[in-house]
Length: 412
Image 1 (cartoon, one colour):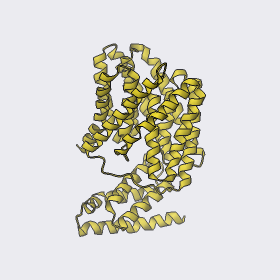
Image 2 (cartoon, one colour):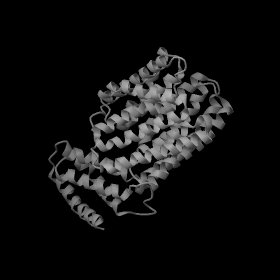
Image 3 (cartoon, one colour):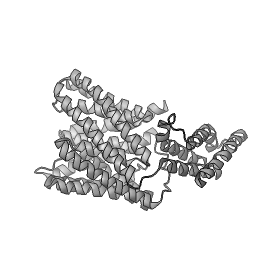
Image 4 (cartoon, helix red, strand yellow):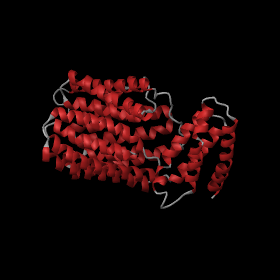
């Protein structure tokens, strides 16, 4: 039930954004922009507070600059996008506040790729509609998090050296440059799919293995979503009401299933895209070439993100796990059990690449993940103020061997 509530809290703002914007504007691009920003805001989750509404005007300036530069010359818009995203990624070296600011400004910029807004002959009017769409999306995302009770968990503080964030900015710049070049050269008017794929795979990757795993998940998800979308596109035809209902159902399912793996989210978005085409007038077998092109563009974008992460100052997954384990142990030692629970969640997330190949290549770091995960019920009880001597004894019994093995691994 808790997972269902979280899925509803993530999907309700998207639905509310669409329902609000449709009566206000009949411009499909503006409605899709609002829905895209709402989905990304719901997925980003952490650090989403009322202060983000104050950044909407700044985000509008970013949108305006990109729209004007891109429609003046693709090269100018491409360069602006690459530099903005790379700077926002590297800004995390300055602290959590700078990282939140960078993500808040990049969010509408990514939305512009999903739903391009052409300034045309009325750039200020278009900018005003785009600003309204972003404001409505951010506002509903904030309300959804408050009502869903999911805004109480702060983001774990990053202790990564500043140079790591700077190198991630460099990796992001290289990945996006490759994606723009390949996308606009090979995929024509569908180049944005390559760039979006490169950004979504590379932006959240914390290690070389994480980038590889996310790239594989996105490719598998896009493949599965393409198969489902082909059936849906042929079945729906030009029935708009059926397409709207299925579109909402597919996105709602994606919000719930994403907790089991990123591939589910990629699949749901791909299937939803086919239904969106039917709403825009592309129906039946006419969608098949578009879906095939999108699958190829997604694979190309994933490769664009994986190559810099693997070749340019790569961060090893084992090193990330050693650092996360040490942070979790220190939090438990200091009695900060709520912090330890957040650290444990970050540890499991970082271990996903090694867990995926556990049977092929077992690693000692996974024993730490198993041991600390087994303590989660005890840590939750201690964090709630339950002074259970048995729980404290079990925690002490597990910490000693994990700490000893961690010291041995660090020495090696």
